[in-house]
Length: 491
Image (cartoon, rainbow, N blue to C red; front, side, top):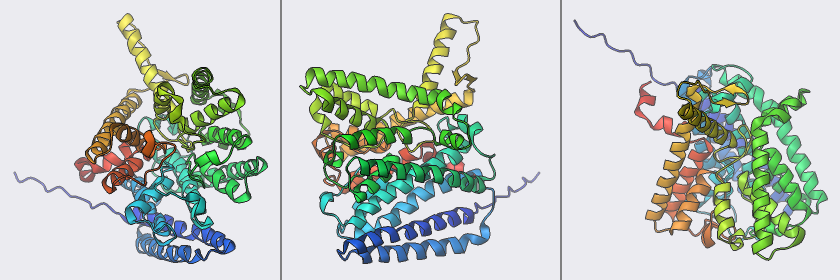
């Protein structure tokens, strides 16, 4: 009997192309803001953003127009994966144009690195002499991180729970709709989040201004603080400021690392979930313990005294834990124990559904819940013990997804560090660089890429490796790895 041929339907890329083209055009439109900043400053750099904007808007508009006949309300699972990754590949390409055409005149590898670092809110930089850059470029760096911050909130609240990436499906019940209406749902969430995001940014800017920052510095640093991105206007990062500004930064870094869905619920008149969220409690408790431990160490062993020591410890610990990456001083001088602890602090991260990055606190909670249940089974083989999160039983699919994430994270970090080592980097730079890029922290360790340095001196191969790690880490690893499998394209 003859075998019946299998009908294969080609993947329709038009819905994906339409959204990517539309977002590229919007990115081009935002370039008008730094153009205006350059016009006001009067350094003659405004044409850089005009050229970049025209190119970006034209290309994005043409892509969206050519794909508009394929727009649908629903997206298939393949299209959703491709859209999630495609946006974070396309936007940095066009975001790099001002760095190439402007005063920095960066090569494409460096411009793409800076743009990817901005949009993924990593905060690693290849640019030296930030203090002398035109205001337009400084504002553009802030805008990239600000746009990346709100973008990742939408991805974390809409796409990743539906794609069941890294245990994010546990938050599906906190969403706004069901799978199959991804685009309308993304639009609805974006509109709600945008109001909160803008309000938080404006409040942060006003607080910075009250603490003594200039209007421009307050605006740019508010954008990179709320995005937990860490791009600063000075080579000294946050070391250019002191006192009240650091306390303001700590408050808003912590707020930005909380689940934005809780802020949505507060605006709807329900503040109770914010105080009952076990993820928030664990995050704040962890931050408090780490700050206390490092403060005691610094007061006892580094010779630091008084309020400045407490402030510097608080600021830098919160900055690394939230993945912001600001540095108010070179913490490499604190000693071996603090530096080692801070390395692992960066691998904790904030809450799911926030602008913070890294592994995220809820995954550690699920990991410990699973370990606890397993130990109970060993002690009582006939008992039934189910891991629980926020009082709810956790299904095996969530636990499997979380365990897979941890394995992939460790393996990927090791692979990235190994590849960086092959390019000639030393062990400290390779390992800390891999962690900084994959966890989207910003600075690494050591003299070259530590808080007192930057990534500009690395070779081109290592920069491309780090760019890939930033993308993979920002999209929670599995969202990128899935499209690299043969089974994905055969589905």
